[in-house]
Length: 179
Image (cartoon, rainbow, N blue to C red; front, top):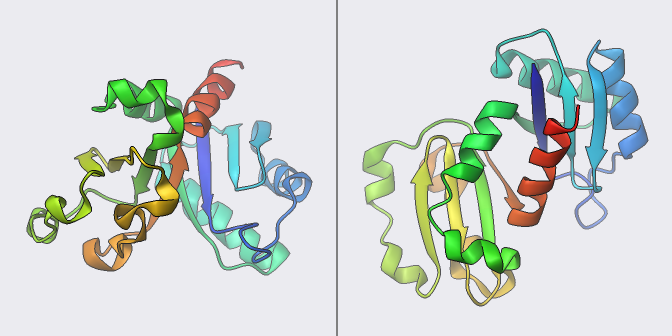
């Protein structure tokens, strides 16, 4: 099966440095094939015989901790899951301005009660919608000025979260389909 691993928080602001060459070597050393990385922010596509993304997450996290000494959080999605994320985009018009559209990948579906405590009006004009272990974020004025992006989502939802912009998400899909 083809997968993408999203490694949270590496190579951001000079912290948790991990070269993509080292990451590719590490992934290959785990027995994964067709390994390719995209940009420096921790996106790696690969093939594996495993059919459980959670097992892959744990395996990769453990190997990075042991071999490189970094404590990182990883979320893995299958090729089909990433395709479903793209197809499920509720902000189709924003895809024409991909810098305004972001995807927050969630470690699990959010608890409804916790999610209902978040008033979306506080973020206007920004907006968000939740899908299957994913949150779509539309920030018409850019992510840098967004109250939505600065909101403590992980703490409020009690989940691990990593985000990618729309360009990255669609490029990763292309990479998954190329093999």
